[in-house]
Amino acid sequence: MVKVVVIGSSSMDLVVTSSKRPGAGETVIGESFKTVPGGKGANQAVAAARLGAEVYMIGCVGGDHYGKAMIKNFHDHGVITKYVETIAEMESGTAHIILAEGDNSIVVVKGANDAVIPAYVQRAKPIIQQADIVLIQQEIPEETVEYTADVCKELGVPLLLNPAPARPISENVIEKATFITPNEHEAALLFMEVSQEAALKKYPEKVFITEGAQGVRYFNGEQEVIIPSYQVEAVDTTGAGDTFNAAFAIALAEGKTIEGSLRFANRAASLSVTKFGAQGGMPSRKEVEETL
Ligand code: ATP
Ligand code: RIB
Image: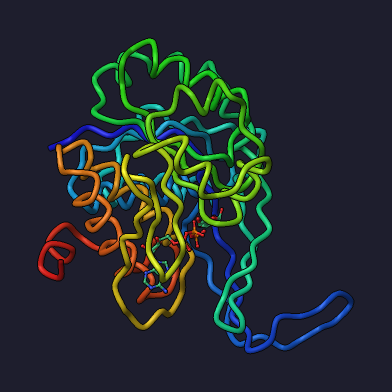
């Protein structure tokens, strides 16, 4: 069983479904409202646990009922919460999601996720040292991502950076991360000065651009290749990237080839979009293996 450390956000997703996305100043009548656990860090931790890894989460929740529900959700999935802090005086992170016209739009209010400062990562160094791989995203402060990149480099532990949501990243982080997995929008911001083709070529088998239903693109040292995803009937694509990242990290940590790991990740992520909610469709190990 591989040991995975996830450093990131935990948010409650407040999800509205509507046949029409409202424009500025417009009011529309929606169809449903649901509250489900989310946040990129928590999603990746839960996805990794469902896929059979031993998972340690490093993060913060608020002192409200969302915080309690998110901790319970971690426990329900077997995620180890020794390094999850409850910040009594803060509100939990929330993501305000509209599912309309076949896609989502999301406003994230970071709340307690802003309290995930480098000191928490420092405290967890003994467990990071034992990890097979560390996963991090960008719904927590930039200096924490920076510090984690330094720690992973110092300890010789592979770091997978999922640079979502989009924000600029320092050269230090780009150099120290082992794998970087932007989607197309994030890649456009990350590599503004060069073409996507040039960026992939500069970082062979390090930068992997996810392209939704198309799959994932990277440079294998000789040529740019795309590993296609699997055809499914998508119900809700929220969290597809999180399932992809967790599955990719586990497969790499288990010693699968890059290509084999990408196929495993595509399969897991494609299954995840067939059900409602970021975590609702995250598959078990058995489901992925049976359908690969
Ligand atoms: P999100 O922010 O919604 O979690 P993302 O924008 O970070 O996702 P995407 O590039 O949309 O990431 O998707 C990640 C991976 O999920 C893709 O590389 C692919 O493997 C899988 N995927 C996403 N959407 C689909 C789909 N409609 N059909 C099949 N696979 C999909
Ligand atoms: O990646 C999906 C997640 O992004 C959602 O669960 C939501 O919390 C947003 O932050």
